[in-house]
Image (cartoon, rainbow, N blue to C red; front, side, top):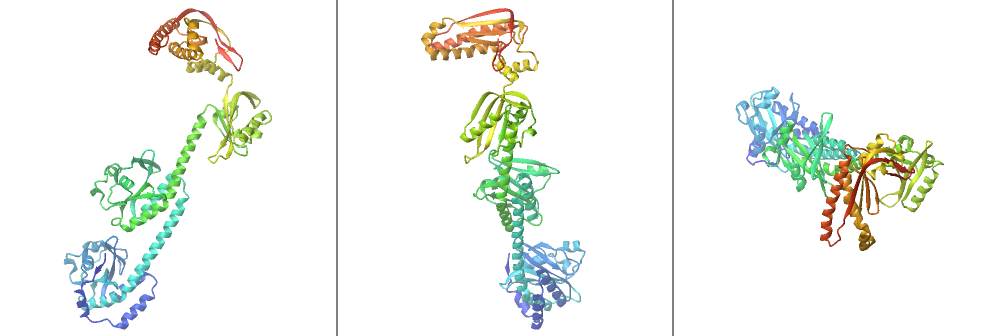
Length: 620
């Protein structure tokens, strides 16, 4: 804010006596020798105080952004900066009106701010105050002289000070401009250093905290929060420190001040948060924090896409101004790339952890090799199947690891890499630590997105006797029962005599039916029929023994017996007949022939066991 000096102020000065021109030249000489703005202001105050016989003087300069008058230097004991609104107090009155004044009884003047005297312990009795003009006749501040040592301030004192300030305003204005450029330069260098430091940080949580701390420091605020958008959930999220820990906060990306900025891409600067309907006071209630002012700007990446927002709360002095907006926008624009890189790194780490977890939870062994045939990864299952620890596998060269006993694996591996094909080897035998392992191997090359070979992978499926037995048993009974039998340690390869109920069922007139249906129709019909019948058997705890053409053989009481196996077999038979009737209705509606079956049950002592070779067993 700049004001023109009213014409009414000038005649009073012209009527006063004129300061000697030699004295004015000496002031210029004294000021020209000084190197800093603070030194120039301090020297001016010494000159003004001496010329007016005052006790102390203060120069207040106007801050257009905050609409405040601030003192850069005060003579006497008062050394710290004073800031007042440029409409308050006697200084504010002179700045606003552009009129020089002399107040002989300050304490009784309603314009006087008594709080300053109360804070400093100084007693102001009388005062001379006049506006400071630049070369364009704009008012850029005021000068104030307090407590004339003898008698009162006069128009002559007013004239002296006016001419001194008129002569010195060039030094003030030019140094203000220089200082502003220096400040801007320091800010730019500071910003470059900060961005350079942050660009090397790839941990998203650490980077978020650094950005929030820097935004708070840069704008002299109470706190800051940086929210990034989660495109999967359409939520804004951030990590907020709480003591030694941190907590993640999330909310829909259209809610509140942050949501409005994210959706519209427009900066919001609110001097009074509770007066804005978009502000949600619930956060203050939860945290005990009192939000006064808010500055929220969008974070835009190099593709002009909004990826989040930065929100700064409660500027410590005054409200957020246009300069704060510009600085925060520049800062967020610079760190947008670093934020995106860190976010991408976090997502890649999560994916890597997910893949690693999935790899470790697989029941099949997995080995991956790089281009030099060095083993890079080995999951738990792989180490368990081979009977060695993962540390004995990782970083081993494949030639050394597989050795002469398993050299054929290396030959196969070279072939799949060379041909860029996958090879599956069933019922293979490999030897490690002197032990023979029966496995199924899958060998495949690893290709990057540019179709360039980056290594190979070996998948190992354990088909040891226990695995074979479980696989065999699972064909007949529920897999959980098979696991229970194997974990009990029973000798499933040997036979045992147990009481059981055997169920036989076949299709009546199957030969005639199959001739009418033909080969393909017969196969389709049998598959549908067996699906329905086997469900009825397994629901009652029965074990499917085998299919014999159109016949079904099942048993109740093996391999695990129940007190009511006979009843179970009977209930399964009744269920089979009911299911068949329902199916026949459907077949008739489709124009197909109905099917009739016969079922026989017999209870007696049977011999059961797993019969076959190590590579092929059947339970019967």
